[in-house]
Length: 142
Image (cartoon, rainbow, N blue to C red):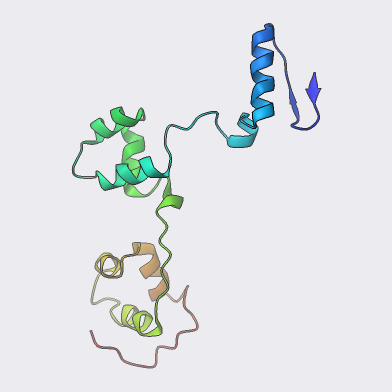
């Protein structure tokens, strides 16, 4: 029978399955509400996987969390769960000028490490996609 509030249809050959589905709807744990019934990872586990890079093997981490080795690699590379590693950083105008002035002198990787951000943040600053309001008129010490 259709449930107008959630928009699902409960079809079952067993009263136990129908009851379980109704409980899921009542408790707000349907696939529609959460995307999955139960996730294997959360932010803390993902942070652990990233922090353990180089200390534990990919195979050990995959086994520890019940995920594939490919998934561990993607997490460590920042491809999967990338929303959890976004770094909010506000730069001063002098820092922006320094980053722009070092284009071609220092690599984006080195600058990203120096400022504690992702390489893409440095790229966007150097190409003028972000911080467009900062004028490049003052020289800054290297």
